[in-house]
Length: 88
Image (cartoon, rainbow, N blue to C red):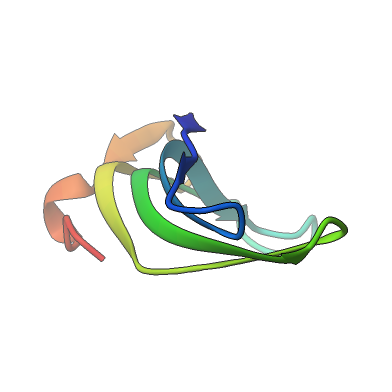
């Protein structure tokens, strides 16, 4: 992913970003086999404030788009994207 910094002044900047994230989970060794993977494109619109040269405060909203959701119960991954919400 990547982003840019669009300064309004020396202390304030708009920082839009777009990042591809993969999130997931899996079972422990003593539990039934299970894996889950979800891939998202995250679009953030952050506002940065620099109160001093050593500090940068950043915050703002984010929109997440689900690219794929897959589940594996021991037979290989199966697409579950259509069963999930596309936007978060």
